[in-house]
Image 1 (cartoon, rainbow, N blue to C red):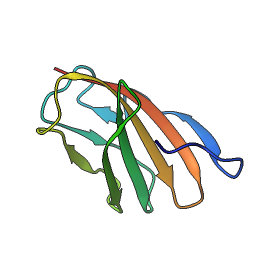
Image 2: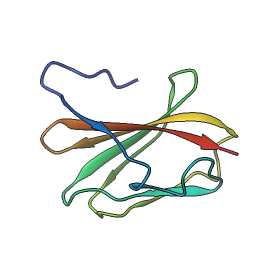
Image 3: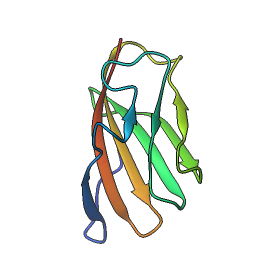
Image 4: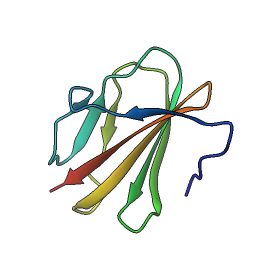
Length: 91
């Protein structure tokens, strides 16, 4: 699990307008992000990292077909160490 460090800046929660589709979802989700590279990490309800992607697209589509239904935590880290988060439910 990625643990925030003192150098990380918490930028806040990802708003429902930035997460598509809103909860619940199925095979994918997309995010509306500021420009720049980001690291997207998905954790399951047990806190285990189940997916990690480095992206440069401001509207990435994250495929989740291989994940079981459940509750997930999305963590988005920007190049300056800023972190945003959201909770996502997969049906």
